[in-house]
Length: 356
Image (tube, rainbow, N blue to C red; front, side, top):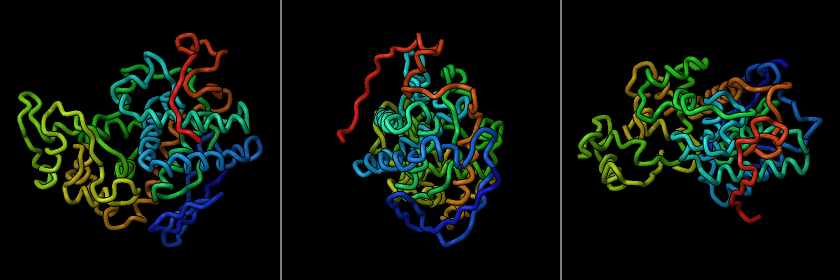
Protein backbone atom coordinates (compact mmCIF):
# COMPACT_ATOMS: atom_id res chain seq x y z
CA UNK A 1 0.00 0.00 0.00
CA UNK A 2 1.17 3.52 -0.74
CA UNK A 3 1.47 6.54 1.47
CA UNK A 4 -1.55 7.84 3.32
CA UNK A 5 -2.39 11.44 4.06
CA UNK A 6 -4.06 12.45 7.27
CA UNK A 7 -5.63 15.81 8.03
CA UNK A 8 -5.10 17.19 11.53
CA UNK A 9 -7.40 19.71 13.19
CA UNK A 10 -5.64 20.77 16.53
CA UNK A 11 -5.19 22.66 19.85
CA UNK A 12 -7.64 20.68 21.90
CA UNK A 13 -8.72 17.13 21.31
CA UNK A 14 -12.21 16.03 20.38
CA UNK A 15 -13.19 12.51 21.42
CA UNK A 16 -16.10 11.35 19.26
CA UNK A 17 -18.14 8.16 19.05
CA UNK A 18 -16.85 6.07 16.15
CA UNK A 19 -14.25 8.63 15.11
CA UNK A 20 -11.59 10.76 16.68
CA UNK A 21 -10.25 14.11 15.65
CA UNK A 22 -7.39 16.09 17.06
CA UNK A 23 -7.93 19.74 16.80
CA UNK A 24 -5.06 21.44 14.76
CA UNK A 25 -5.17 23.97 11.92
CA UNK A 26 -6.11 21.95 8.86
CA UNK A 27 -3.04 20.55 7.14
CA UNK A 28 -2.20 17.21 5.61
CA UNK A 29 0.52 14.90 6.88
CA UNK A 30 1.78 12.16 4.58
CA UNK A 31 2.28 8.94 6.50
CA UNK A 32 4.93 6.39 5.53
CA UNK A 33 4.28 3.18 3.64
CA UNK A 34 3.83 0.33 6.16
CA UNK A 35 6.53 -2.31 6.42
CA UNK A 36 5.91 -5.60 4.67
CA UNK A 37 3.13 -7.56 6.33
CA UNK A 38 1.32 -4.57 7.85
CA UNK A 39 -1.42 -2.55 6.20
CA UNK A 40 -3.84 0.27 6.98
CA UNK A 41 -6.83 -2.04 6.37
CA UNK A 42 -5.56 -5.34 7.76
CA UNK A 43 -8.70 -6.21 9.77
CA UNK A 44 -11.29 -4.54 7.54
CA UNK A 45 -12.82 -7.92 6.67
CA UNK A 46 -11.65 -10.28 9.45
CA UNK A 47 -12.50 -7.96 12.38
CA UNK A 48 -14.17 -4.76 11.15
CA UNK A 49 -15.29 -3.70 14.64
CA UNK A 50 -11.79 -3.94 16.16
CA UNK A 51 -11.00 -0.25 16.44
CA UNK A 52 -14.42 0.68 17.80
CA UNK A 53 -14.10 -2.04 20.46
CA UNK A 54 -10.68 -0.76 21.55
CA UNK A 55 -11.89 2.85 21.60
CA UNK A 56 -14.94 1.97 23.70
CA UNK A 57 -12.88 0.13 26.32
CA UNK A 58 -10.23 2.85 26.45
CA UNK A 59 -12.94 5.44 26.93
CA UNK A 60 -14.46 3.37 29.72
CA UNK A 61 -11.21 3.06 31.66
CA UNK A 62 -9.85 6.56 31.03
CA UNK A 63 -13.15 8.19 31.95
CA UNK A 64 -12.57 6.62 35.36
CA UNK A 65 -8.87 7.44 35.54
CA UNK A 66 -7.16 9.49 32.83
CA UNK A 67 -3.74 8.80 34.38
CA UNK A 68 -3.88 5.29 32.90
CA UNK A 69 -3.19 6.82 29.48
CA UNK A 70 0.46 7.25 30.47
CA UNK A 71 0.70 3.64 31.63
CA UNK A 72 -0.58 2.25 28.34
CA UNK A 73 1.67 4.51 26.25
CA UNK A 74 4.73 3.54 28.30
CA UNK A 75 3.90 -0.15 27.99
CA UNK A 76 3.83 0.19 24.18
CA UNK A 77 7.27 1.86 24.28
CA UNK A 78 8.71 -0.89 26.46
CA UNK A 79 7.26 -3.55 24.18
CA UNK A 80 8.58 -2.09 20.93
CA UNK A 81 12.09 -1.19 22.05
CA UNK A 82 12.80 -4.75 23.25
CA UNK A 83 12.84 -7.29 20.38
CA UNK A 84 10.21 -5.31 18.47
CA UNK A 85 6.47 -4.66 18.78
CA UNK A 86 5.50 -8.26 19.46
CA UNK A 87 3.58 -8.17 22.74
CA UNK A 88 6.48 -9.81 24.58
CA UNK A 89 6.19 -7.37 27.50
CA UNK A 90 2.69 -8.70 28.15
CA UNK A 91 3.91 -12.23 28.86
CA UNK A 92 3.75 -13.08 32.55
CA UNK A 93 6.22 -15.45 34.20
CA UNK A 94 8.84 -15.64 36.93
CA UNK A 95 11.61 -14.72 34.47
CA UNK A 96 9.60 -12.66 31.97
CA UNK A 97 10.34 -9.10 30.84
CA UNK A 98 7.76 -7.85 33.32
CA UNK A 99 10.00 -8.68 36.29
CA UNK A 100 13.10 -6.97 34.87
CA UNK A 101 14.10 -3.68 36.56
CA UNK A 102 12.99 -1.29 33.77
CA UNK A 103 9.54 -2.92 33.69
CA UNK A 104 8.64 -3.53 37.33
CA UNK A 105 7.13 -0.03 37.48
CA UNK A 106 4.81 -0.66 34.53
CA UNK A 107 1.28 -0.20 35.83
CA UNK A 108 -0.56 -3.35 36.84
CA UNK A 109 -3.84 -1.81 35.72
CA UNK A 110 -2.40 -1.26 32.24
CA UNK A 111 -1.95 -5.03 31.91
CA UNK A 112 -5.51 -5.53 33.17
CA UNK A 113 -6.86 -3.08 30.58
CA UNK A 114 -5.09 -4.88 27.73
CA UNK A 115 -6.41 -8.24 28.97
CA UNK A 116 -9.93 -6.83 29.13
CA UNK A 117 -9.72 -5.40 25.62
CA UNK A 118 -8.38 -8.71 24.35
CA UNK A 119 -11.36 -10.53 25.88
CA UNK A 120 -13.78 -8.10 24.23
CA UNK A 121 -12.04 -8.46 20.87
CA UNK A 122 -11.99 -12.27 21.16
CA UNK A 123 -15.74 -12.24 21.78
CA UNK A 124 -16.21 -10.46 18.45
CA UNK A 125 -13.38 -11.95 16.38
CA UNK A 126 -11.92 -15.08 17.95
CA UNK A 127 -8.31 -15.93 17.15
CA UNK A 128 -7.85 -13.06 14.70
CA UNK A 129 -6.29 -10.03 16.43
CA UNK A 130 -2.86 -10.07 18.10
CA UNK A 131 -2.12 -8.68 21.53
CA UNK A 132 0.66 -6.61 19.92
CA UNK A 133 -1.88 -4.84 17.70
CA UNK A 134 -4.25 -4.31 20.62
CA UNK A 135 -1.45 -2.70 22.64
CA UNK A 136 -0.54 -0.40 19.73
CA UNK A 137 -4.17 0.67 19.31
CA UNK A 138 -4.67 1.16 23.05
CA UNK A 139 -1.59 3.41 23.25
CA UNK A 140 -2.77 5.46 20.26
CA UNK A 141 -6.29 5.88 21.63
CA UNK A 142 -4.96 6.72 25.10
CA UNK A 143 -2.82 9.52 23.68
CA UNK A 144 -5.81 10.88 21.81
CA UNK A 145 -8.14 10.62 24.81
CA UNK A 146 -5.60 12.63 26.84
CA UNK A 147 -5.60 15.42 24.23
CA UNK A 148 -3.02 14.25 21.73
CA UNK A 149 -3.27 13.51 18.01
CA UNK A 150 -5.24 10.69 16.45
CA UNK A 151 -3.63 8.89 13.53
CA UNK A 152 -4.19 5.74 11.45
CA UNK A 153 -2.19 2.68 12.48
CA UNK A 154 -0.90 -0.02 10.14
CA UNK A 155 -1.89 -3.37 11.65
CA UNK A 156 -1.04 -7.02 11.18
CA UNK A 157 1.50 -7.60 13.96
CA UNK A 158 1.80 -11.11 15.38
CA UNK A 159 2.64 -12.06 18.96
CA UNK A 160 5.99 -13.43 20.06
CA UNK A 161 6.32 -16.98 21.35
CA UNK A 162 8.81 -15.91 24.03
CA UNK A 163 10.12 -12.91 25.91
CA UNK A 164 13.55 -11.26 25.88
CA UNK A 165 16.20 -12.01 28.51
CA UNK A 166 17.40 -9.47 31.06
CA UNK A 167 20.51 -8.54 29.09
CA UNK A 168 18.43 -7.66 26.04
CA UNK A 169 15.95 -5.65 28.09
CA UNK A 170 18.66 -3.59 29.79
CA UNK A 171 20.48 -2.98 26.51
CA UNK A 172 17.38 -1.62 24.80
CA UNK A 173 15.70 0.50 27.48
CA UNK A 174 18.06 3.40 28.32
CA UNK A 175 18.13 4.50 31.95
CA UNK A 176 16.57 7.87 32.92
CA UNK A 177 20.08 8.98 33.90
CA UNK A 178 21.23 8.74 30.25
CA UNK A 179 22.39 11.75 28.24
CA UNK A 180 21.75 12.33 24.53
CA UNK A 181 24.82 10.34 23.52
CA UNK A 182 23.70 7.38 25.61
CA UNK A 183 20.14 7.58 24.34
CA UNK A 184 21.21 7.75 20.71
CA UNK A 185 23.59 4.83 21.15
CA UNK A 186 20.40 2.75 21.47
CA UNK A 187 17.99 4.67 19.24
CA UNK A 188 20.29 5.15 16.26
CA UNK A 189 20.66 1.37 15.92
CA UNK A 190 16.89 1.24 15.44
CA UNK A 191 16.91 3.90 12.74
CA UNK A 192 15.83 6.84 14.90
CA UNK A 193 17.12 10.38 14.44
CA UNK A 194 17.74 13.14 16.99
CA UNK A 195 14.35 14.57 16.01
CA UNK A 196 12.70 11.20 16.70
CA UNK A 197 14.37 11.14 20.11
CA UNK A 198 12.95 14.53 21.06
CA UNK A 199 9.48 13.71 19.71
CA UNK A 200 9.20 10.33 21.44
CA UNK A 201 10.46 11.85 24.70
CA UNK A 202 7.36 14.06 24.49
CA UNK A 203 5.44 11.08 25.85
CA UNK A 204 6.64 12.39 29.21
CA UNK A 205 4.03 15.13 28.95
CA UNK A 206 1.82 12.65 30.84
CA UNK A 207 2.67 10.24 33.63
CA UNK A 208 4.64 10.13 36.86
CA UNK A 209 8.22 9.38 37.85
CA UNK A 210 9.64 7.51 40.84
CA UNK A 211 12.10 9.30 43.12
CA UNK A 212 14.67 6.61 42.38
CA UNK A 213 14.56 7.55 38.68
CA UNK A 214 15.82 11.08 39.24
CA UNK A 215 17.58 10.78 42.60
CA UNK A 216 20.90 11.31 40.81
CA UNK A 217 19.83 14.95 40.37
CA UNK A 218 19.06 15.49 44.06
CA UNK A 219 21.49 13.46 46.17
CA UNK A 220 25.07 12.26 46.22
CA UNK A 221 24.97 8.62 45.14
CA UNK A 222 27.67 7.64 47.66
CA UNK A 223 26.85 9.64 50.79
CA UNK A 224 23.14 10.27 50.22
CA UNK A 225 23.61 13.94 51.08
CA UNK A 226 21.76 16.63 49.14
CA UNK A 227 23.60 17.44 45.92
CA UNK A 228 21.49 19.36 43.43
CA UNK A 229 22.04 19.01 39.69
CA UNK A 230 22.96 22.54 38.53
CA UNK A 231 20.69 22.14 35.50
CA UNK A 232 17.66 21.98 37.82
CA UNK A 233 15.71 25.18 38.42
CA UNK A 234 16.18 26.05 42.10
CA UNK A 235 12.49 26.47 42.95
CA UNK A 236 11.64 23.24 41.17
CA UNK A 237 14.48 21.45 42.99
CA UNK A 238 13.12 22.66 46.34
CA UNK A 239 9.72 21.17 45.46
CA UNK A 240 11.34 17.86 44.48
CA UNK A 241 13.18 17.70 47.81
CA UNK A 242 9.79 17.87 49.55
CA UNK A 243 8.69 14.81 47.55
CA UNK A 244 12.04 12.98 47.72
CA UNK A 245 13.78 14.20 50.91
CA UNK A 246 16.25 11.29 51.02
CA UNK A 247 17.89 9.02 48.48
CA UNK A 248 15.77 6.13 49.78
CA UNK A 249 12.37 7.82 49.56
CA UNK A 250 9.74 5.76 47.76
CA UNK A 251 7.43 8.30 46.15
CA UNK A 252 6.29 9.59 42.76
CA UNK A 253 5.58 12.95 41.19
CA UNK A 254 4.23 14.28 37.91
CA UNK A 255 6.56 14.30 34.91
CA UNK A 256 5.01 17.52 33.57
CA UNK A 257 4.30 20.16 36.21
CA UNK A 258 2.17 22.33 33.90
CA UNK A 259 -0.49 19.92 32.60
CA UNK A 260 0.24 16.49 34.03
CA UNK A 261 -2.74 14.63 32.55
CA UNK A 262 -3.00 16.42 29.20
CA UNK A 263 -1.05 15.29 26.17
CA UNK A 264 0.30 18.60 24.88
CA UNK A 265 3.61 20.39 24.32
CA UNK A 266 4.06 21.68 27.89
CA UNK A 267 6.78 19.09 28.54
CA UNK A 268 9.03 21.09 26.20
CA UNK A 269 8.15 24.31 28.03
CA UNK A 270 9.26 22.51 31.19
CA UNK A 271 12.58 21.72 29.47
CA UNK A 272 13.15 25.38 28.60
CA UNK A 273 12.52 26.26 32.24
CA UNK A 274 14.77 23.46 33.56
CA UNK A 275 11.79 21.85 35.32
CA UNK A 276 11.84 18.22 34.22
CA UNK A 277 12.63 15.15 36.30
CA UNK A 278 15.08 12.96 34.44
CA UNK A 279 18.59 13.57 33.17
CA UNK A 280 17.34 11.99 29.93
CA UNK A 281 14.77 14.79 29.71
CA UNK A 282 16.90 17.84 30.51
CA UNK A 283 19.76 16.65 28.32
CA UNK A 284 17.54 17.27 25.28
CA UNK A 285 17.73 21.00 25.96
CA UNK A 286 21.30 21.02 27.25
CA UNK A 287 22.67 19.26 24.16
CA UNK A 288 23.09 21.44 21.07
CA UNK A 289 22.19 18.53 18.80
CA UNK A 290 18.62 18.47 20.09
CA UNK A 291 18.04 21.94 21.57
CA UNK A 292 16.54 23.55 18.46
CA UNK A 293 13.97 20.76 18.13
CA UNK A 294 12.98 21.23 21.78
CA UNK A 295 12.50 24.96 21.20
CA UNK A 296 10.44 24.33 18.06
CA UNK A 297 8.13 21.91 19.88
CA UNK A 298 7.83 24.26 22.89
CA UNK A 299 6.48 27.09 20.74
CA UNK A 300 4.59 25.02 18.15
CA UNK A 301 2.35 22.21 19.39
CA UNK A 302 1.30 21.33 15.84
CA UNK A 303 4.94 20.70 14.93
CA UNK A 304 5.28 18.40 17.94
CA UNK A 305 2.09 16.48 17.19
CA UNK A 306 3.03 15.92 13.56
CA UNK A 307 6.51 14.65 14.39
CA UNK A 308 5.19 12.56 17.28
CA UNK A 309 2.87 10.76 14.87
CA UNK A 310 5.69 10.05 12.42
CA UNK A 311 8.06 8.88 15.14
CA UNK A 312 5.39 6.70 16.77
CA UNK A 313 4.61 5.07 13.44
CA UNK A 314 8.30 4.34 13.01
CA UNK A 315 8.57 2.91 16.52
CA UNK A 316 5.36 0.89 16.16
CA UNK A 317 6.80 -1.02 13.20
CA UNK A 318 10.11 -2.02 14.81
CA UNK A 319 10.99 -5.66 14.09
CA UNK A 320 7.35 -6.71 13.86
CA UNK A 321 6.37 -10.34 13.39
CA UNK A 322 4.00 -10.82 10.45
CA UNK A 323 2.54 -13.52 8.23
CA UNK A 324 3.29 -16.97 9.65
CA UNK A 325 5.75 -15.66 12.26
CA UNK A 326 4.82 -15.90 15.93
CA UNK A 327 1.18 -16.49 16.76
CA UNK A 328 -2.13 -14.86 17.71
CA UNK A 329 -2.24 -15.41 21.46
CA UNK A 330 -5.50 -16.52 23.04
CA UNK A 331 -4.38 -14.96 26.33
CA UNK A 332 -1.96 -12.02 26.19
CA UNK A 333 -0.13 -13.21 29.30
CA UNK A 334 0.87 -16.68 28.08
CA UNK A 335 1.81 -18.34 24.79
CA UNK A 336 -0.87 -20.55 23.32
CA UNK A 337 -1.03 -24.09 24.77
CA UNK A 338 0.27 -25.43 21.45
CA UNK A 339 3.48 -23.42 21.85
CA UNK A 340 6.60 -25.23 23.11
CA UNK A 341 7.28 -22.17 25.30
CA UNK A 342 3.99 -22.56 27.16
CA UNK A 343 5.36 -24.99 29.72
CA UNK A 344 7.48 -22.40 31.55
CA UNK A 345 4.41 -20.33 32.40
CA UNK A 346 1.78 -20.72 35.06
CA UNK A 347 -1.38 -20.95 32.96
CA UNK A 348 -3.56 -20.05 35.95
CA UNK A 349 -2.96 -16.31 35.78
CA UNK A 350 -5.40 -13.96 37.41
CA UNK A 351 -5.56 -10.18 37.32
CA UNK A 352 -7.74 -7.59 38.92
CA UNK A 353 -10.15 -5.64 36.79
CA UNK A 354 -12.45 -2.68 36.96
CA UNK A 355 -16.10 -3.41 37.37
CA UNK A 356 -18.04 -2.75 34.19
